Image (cartoon, rainbow, N blue to C red; front, side, top):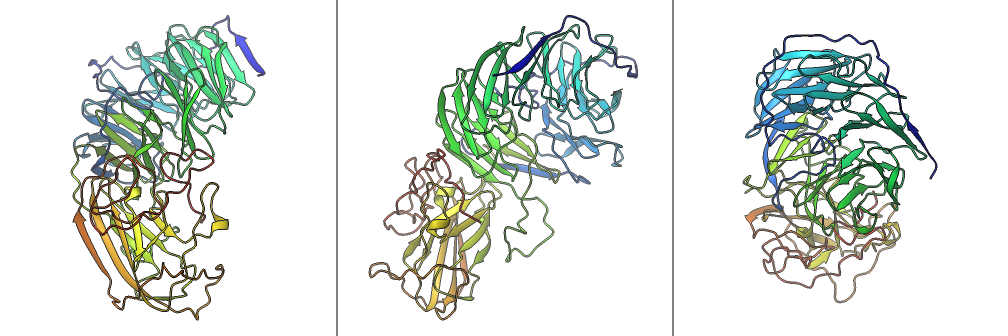
Amino acid sequence: MMNSLRLFTAATVACGAIFLSVPCIAQTAVSSDTAFYQGDSGHSGYVHTTTPAVLSVAWQHTLPDVKTAYSTPALSNGVLYVGAGAHVYALNESDGTIKWQYPADGSAATGQFNCPPAVADGKVFIGSENNNLSVFDANTGALLWQVPTTGTVESAPVVSNGNVFFGSSDGYLYGISEATQQPVWGGEFRSGGPIFSAPAEGDGLIFFADSSSDLYGVRENSGVGLWTYLPTGGISPGSPVYRGDLVYFASGSNIFGLTTRTGSVRTSFSVPGTIVGPPTVSDQNIFVTTSDQEVYCFTLHGSMQWHTHLYDIVSLATQITDSYLFATSRSGVIYALDPQSGQIIWSYSLLKAVSTSTDKSSTSRTNLPRAQTDAAPLVADGKLFILTDDGTVTAFSGNAPDNIAPVVLSVNPKPDSTVAGSSIPFRVFVNDSGSGINPSSVSLTIGGWSAPIFYNPSYSEVSVAYEKQSGNVGLSRVQLPTLPDGVQTATLKIADWRGNVVTKTWSFTVDNTLDPAGSLPPTPLSADSSVPTDNNTSENMTIGQGPTSQPGGVVQAGGPPTNGAGNNAGGQTGVGAGTSSPLPSAPPPSAGGGKFGFPPPPPI
């Protein structure tokens, strides 16, 4: 592969920036439980912590006056630090209450703090769009000093050996001494373009990429550039990653590992798709996500271990712990995958914590209060923290209680409505604010007939009766049989990951003289699949506590409850109630590798 490899032999040039100097503040040692963007100073995404198989919401806090927020928080000494809009917040880890905020009077700062903060030596380091790196006292929130640049600072800072390193859109890499608040090198390192990605630190070097897709290796103690590497395909969004003795980055459909001292290629391999986020690197594996909604696991030498299809493109950085791989989609869906198999162990769909509409009966894809997510997850202290774009911080824990069943927001056909009997557009919107919907628990029956169902976590949507020729690759869509005239009763059962169950029953009337616009010709009922008519037109809902669901299993298409059995590793469905009836066949794996987790989404 063609590339440009240049070795630097001279020191870099000063940019002429002015720095404020204040007396040195007494420093405190950084806590061993400090966690920040991508887990370590190399931004590998590996976090040495263990999390339970199923997480529940411990608390949610919607920060005031936040219009946009997309920076990964940092955690240290029981305090969560968040840059959100024109504010910086310190939240108590235990309950999300505000410990301090900047500005202290609640007014808006002059710039937006949409940069992942770093915490070290009793200080919080965070960049802003007003061209400054700001440094706060981690305990009180007092502004200690600032480093002015001539461009926006969106690059997550990294702190090493008493110095802080960060990039700016002015094209300079800055190295600043904590003790003197002055440049470490007597001048800053000039790159070939604006710097938005976070620099990584390791082996006495700082590694970063600029907007021209040049990757640099710079000596930490002198600012001398050792090498730069320009891949032919550019560099995928996100930071370079330092792990072991190599620097990893993604370029188009390729993964590269460069030696730290010379920038030469030590390893490279191709991925069957365009990589859309930075790689995550553990001791044994590399994890990447692609534009066709796949998550891949490779060995460090490029041997594929597994790949899993998700509903959304996960272009954000993933995090690997000692137990799970966490991925977050931009539509607010969180996934926990088994790093050994790629199987989805747990998932959760975030909705906005504050919704302007109180009437949920007309919920649809267009008005569903979905929470957009542009911040990578933070995993620390056995917990998971997510910041969504509306300024809501959600903390998940394995110990958080969850005794509340899922909520059915709306159903279609609507209760007591009249519809044609063919190609009925069954579509149900659901939500669970505790541990999330367990997809393999969802079942829908119409009379005594089990309908094939599909759960789309991106929209919190249960749907049925998609035409076969409109289906996605690898799944056969089963059209709902034509229902006879009269009142029909539908029963939906859903459980969350803790086993809390909701059963919703509603009735509607079928009139086959109506012409369903755009539907396929009706599929007559066979003699052994007739749907009995139920003259009960009432709508009711029952909520109960079922057995705890166990992780694992492939989503089944419309499996009914099985004598109260919980979900098992074989993929059978069950929500703790109901009578036994034969399970339909599971949908086949998708061509893209949907053997594990959810099937591909149905068409819109």
